[in-house]
Image (cartoon, rainbow, N blue to C red; front, side, top):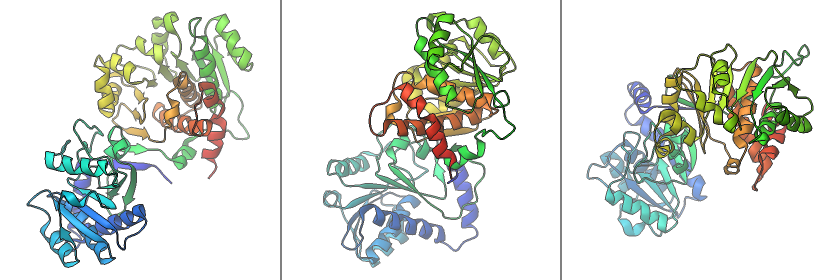
Length: 466
């Protein structure tokens, strides 16, 4: 399966308008309603005798819910519409009544098998009106599964932000394409499982993309019969210190779990000895490299001038952790910055809470300000390029929240850079494989950074095998 692509509200609206002009009236809504009704039936496991409650707002989103209710009622479901507006879709409401559906109220929710969120669609603003919020909370208190139509009502569709109360769905059925809120936290966490229904939209290039295994396969630098350790790439590593020697060991492990042919470590003899004890193939000392990974565990030994020289040089560079403090303006080298929310907040001089609430916005802001690709680590990893392109990684394991995990990622991304990938591609491939290794290593239990690194080859083998 190829990457999931997400489009903006404006892009979707334009594509819908073009298609609507070519189709008989109501065709697009019927396509959406059919896909929605099938997904609802699949979620609850039956239709005949099912008790379905529709929360219906004023827009086409409510119309989709009503027409899906018509199809379910025709298959034997008991369908009740709770109207949240006196401007509910008139034709859909009439069709539901003809199919045997009825108008209900809040007391129908506790005994329902499923509640369908047709409150607001992609044109809605963040937040829910009090009446709608009360109904949504009632369903949650009684444990009734919630299916969102297109997007969970109340989230910010184009940013993934959730500044106000919103629906938390078990299933979101979306139409034509994914929206940014399906891929980017915190809204993505409110979507539950996302099911895409193709309704025939002709769409422009996506606003954001999420890599899948096939995308990684298309980019991964697999060696051939003519390859040697130099042509596979040599990574320069400036990481670790007497204060944090383990960071250099872990970053080296992450790099060797990638496609690179050799690692040159530049740093203290004592740290080099610790790396060599685990990875005797490491080379200690200056020499020609194809890329750099710098910053992990430098601590008080950080030499900002040395990092600044690399950032002004010709080789691409991954900048992690302490190395990020050497950045104060646009970066000349092709660069991949890998901050967590706190580090990005310091780079941008904004509160951490703002970055956590609006990760996509701040990753894009930093990419433009520093003219570098920014990989913002988190439950959803956001990779933003200076030219405005965005990729997100949505398959992370919560067990990745462990000391040294970021060092593994920095080493892996450096390995991919040294093997010839661009910073944007290295970030996307690295984030995907890092998360895939976490799922293999954790298997539902805690993991350590070194365990994560040792699972990178297996994760890569699994990903590269069709």
